[in-house]
Image 1 (tube, rainbow, N blue to C red):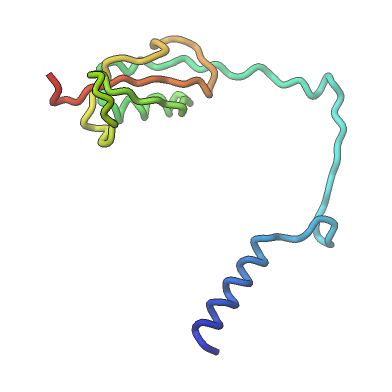
Image 2 (cartoon, rainbow, N blue to C red; image 1 turned 180 degrees about the horizontal axis):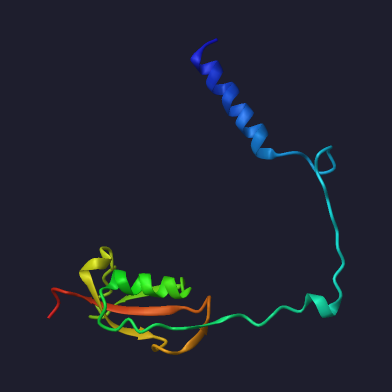
Length: 120
């Protein structure tokens, strides 16, 4: 068998496996459940206290936010030049919004403002 044929057969086998078993085929289960209005009400979202990252290295500040459960982080150049914070360890936190101690939903946008260590 040629190498090209083996590659083609492997790709076809992978594609077939990725599709899975069609609904209603033997070996699959389908369940439907009805929920009443009293059981479908969701619990209130968990609130998270925003950690204080003032003065921290930007990478450490990101890590602290993520440890707290906050992942929707926005980065801002504190000099107003609009530079991208490419190498996080080269930047120092100067501000955050919302402020430390504020309780927010887990999907809240947290703005981290930083300047480079070399900025004067």
